[in-house]
Length: 177
Image (tube, rainbow, N blue to C red):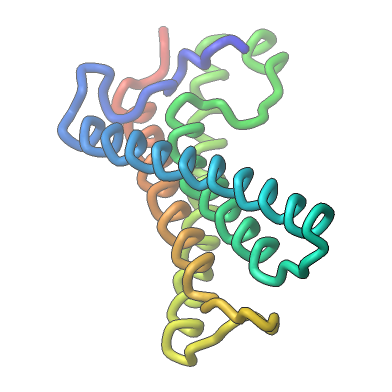
């Protein structure tokens, strides 16, 4: 995959304080997401062993794995966005002029930011409701729902910051001549 030149970085390629802070936050989020992914794999492996070889029921493993995977997915999204690694159509930048591609990047960042801000806002509402109402899953284990909602909210909020910095960086650089 070819990197997108127009707006590939965030505020400044020179490394503004906001860029460096977000890069550190992204690295920490990726570390947490990686640990969650490995933990989820270990929990599922343990579940299979217990179910099929020991013939015991497993009531907490599936929910634990889902919670870990939700966390890994949402906490890794800002890092992936920092690389502009999300799914995209590569043919478009090749067909457009550098100026038109720059405008496309700005438009896509703006629409992405609007969607992600809405998603983050709704995620925080879910988190708050789960926290205040002490909501739990309906299983026999019944873990609190604020855990996955918190991971979703944090990941989406960091993703909003990443897209905002990239959007502002693309605007600050201006269109290629």
